[in-house]
Length: 219
Image (tube, rainbow, N blue to C red):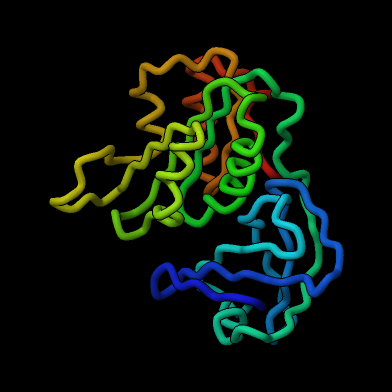
């Protein structure tokens, strides 16, 4: 473990150095990691594959495995399994519009994929990123989003519980998509979040004439 960045009390970004071991992965894939009780959990890789020799995971504390991670320190050696999952393909969608939709810590595999797409920005048309979170204090990677915009992504954030300082979107991502007038022609959607959010967002996207095969999940 090479670095630990606290985002808030129960959310941290963990950075790992592979120690010179080759660790190839595709954007959107995940790893599994066992806690001290032997129970494993899955964590999506948050960094792009181009970041050789290291990878990052975004973790919200909530079970024995995450408790184990939160008890570790920089310099500790951690055993993982992976990469796993099909990830998010980009090559078949050259020339398309890309829409990333995620909530909470499910931003992790979307960030990996977005950063990879921005590395080859000229391969794609419009790139949009819609992120939903609880409050303005729960915008993970918020300090990077201006840079994403500068590199060619439209970034939209919506919060469920806005405060008096919030002057942007509020509500659920599926409601923002339902109300949006932005055309979705020739668009592939990268979707990640809780089961209910994924199901409701998929329904809205289909209502807006996005074919099911253009709505991608990473598992």
